[in-house]
Image (cartoon, rainbow, N blue to C red):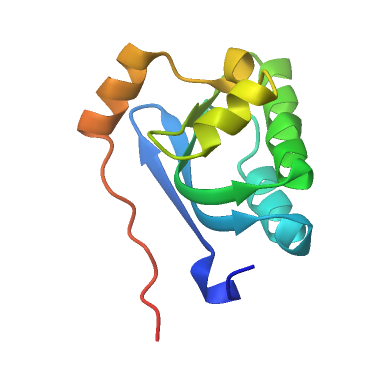
Length: 124
């Protein structure tokens, strides 16, 4: 498990969606931080979760994404997960979540070309 300072969450906007960019390993030890962040997004807009720099998700972190998907879907909004070449792609495929929140290759290319890089907090 990396040190807590290897974990980062950056919130932003892209087009009409909220963007949540995650970096590091997400598991039961930091579930509350992830839960609070995702819950604070509300369910009034589409959400894009950028997982390109997330290195690990356990079942509790996946559960938080599923809960967000259900909240958004219940209000007629979408959750998309941008995974790039990270190991998160394989995780979504193995759990069949790619069918619910995965991004089609054309959409992924569009996002990779246009999504601004996150403003990561500066580490001391």
